[in-house]
Image 1: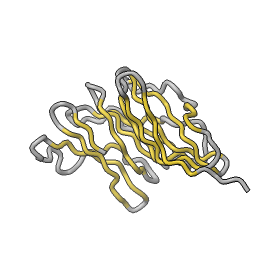
Image 2: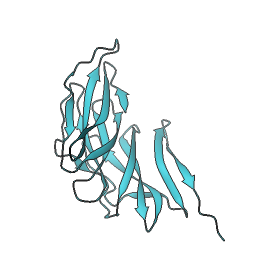
Image 3: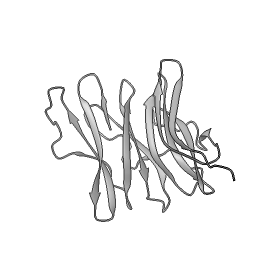
Length: 178
């Protein structure tokens, strides 16, 4: 993922390691100069972090990812300053409702809070959930918000903000009845 802070970009990625992956980032100037050639370690927690996405709130970035440190897949995040400082080195647990797994996060800033979305396993189907996160890193919806619980499979959500409302879109695979 990539976001712009008005001066530089912050690019984030998953970097493969021996026991999974970690989340790294690097600032890039508008003329293409990589300001952090060795990368910024955003999350190096055990057991792997995957699929990072990023948004900017006017002061700091929020990077979110799929995280396996608790032996299930949850969604975590960390705030990163425009100078590349990681404000939440242990991460912020965003999805904590005890689902079997949460994956494929996305994030946008909506004027006063971020909205983080993800797909979650629910008894053999996948649904779309979300949570609002403040600029200070507080999770306002610790049990999550159910965005789509239709029968079948809802996957890979994407979220945007239009100045008033959020729009969440996803891939939908409805189960056909016999």
